[in-house]
Image (tube, rainbow, N blue to C red; front, side):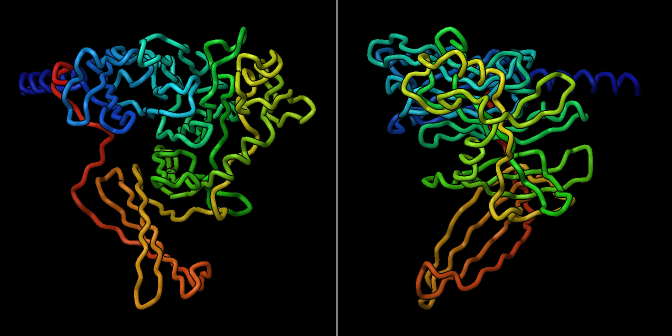
Length: 407
């Protein structure tokens, strides 16, 4: 019996080793008009990226894309890591395309990063602007983050993640959800933050049941934006996995996110003091985090301030000051939102449909109905109905291939 168990253990270990040594594709992003795809995979713990045609055939040599080959800081080493990536065509320095990512930049997972690749002239292959990243090994910037999504919105790229809350560390250990932003035109500072973001800011996301003592869902698991609508973000939040299980769906408007970033900054004067808002008279001009034409021309006072004050004081409020839906003993892991308009007997019915995946491989179907009669701007009634549907679906964030050579 012991011999059988030993053989079984060895086989199980071999399976897990073989699993990690495959190439797990973690990033697929359309480029340009969609005729080409940017692809990045773990490549047996040695991240590698490619550019393919959308029909998955290889590019000829004369269409080589500069900067492609090394996938470090673009996708993770470990297929189990939570990461995000986004190909951005417009708004970058020199109007050059680039990949923005949030991932681990080291095999040891000691260096987590929000990253933008080198910007190359696609005609000449020349590097025009060097990469930009968050400050290395600085817990004020990032502290063991788990990334769940990123979006190109106006002048900024937004990143959503959960991380250890540095502002709570004197009271214990907690995880908070965050939204961070960087300006797409950011080229770093001249002497200070020369390889780092000069516009990086982050704020807490508040998803809670209101009351005198609010009940917080602190850990964001998924974020979704309806394509073509940059005004609203839908997030799935949970309680800590070590306590009582509960999940909520909260929405955040771009206006509330901007309001938080336009508010006061947060700081800790000494290592033993509480985190408090920075008084307005101490904030330099131009305001840190604001998009400017040339960040390398920013004064050192602004760069030093943003280096030590990336955190905003106020959290981003969720829409309507309460979750859309919450339930205990349920752990949401993924979210997709759809909007449906139906004309029925002269009445227009607007539906927002939420599809939430759970850790038990269930699909939870949530339908919110807004009835509008006559004038489409007059909301006469609204109600919400929720249903749960069990099925055999499994929710994944990528796919795997047997070996790196298969791509």
